[in-house]
Length: 115
Ligand code: AMP
Image: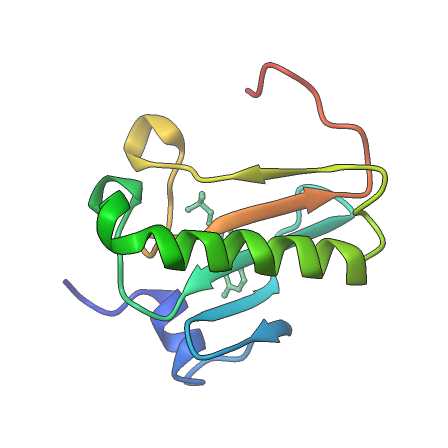
């Protein structure tokens, strides 16, 4: 599998507006935001989709991604009002970049059901 744009952001081959980083995770502003706050939280490990997640192996990583989302939501002042976390998976899920990413969306009221 060729390198995705997110792997190139991790390796700093292409720039991004990074808001959070630790040894496991990177988070940066979405280049085409769908809400006033739209941040992508990604693992540094190359995982294509949610389908490759094994709960027994990746529970710690997923917990760390949620921890990062809560911390970033506080820093972006969307924590108290609420926000949405989304994993798109595969074609019908609307996934465009095949490197696992958690969308953190906030700053406005979200509609349900999603489109
Ligand atoms: P998805 O449709 O779930 O795969 O979401 C991919 C997201 O990545 C979209 O919201 C894009 O706007 C975003 N995106 C694509 N390229 C970049 C980039 N270079 N920097 C930041 N976000 C990007």
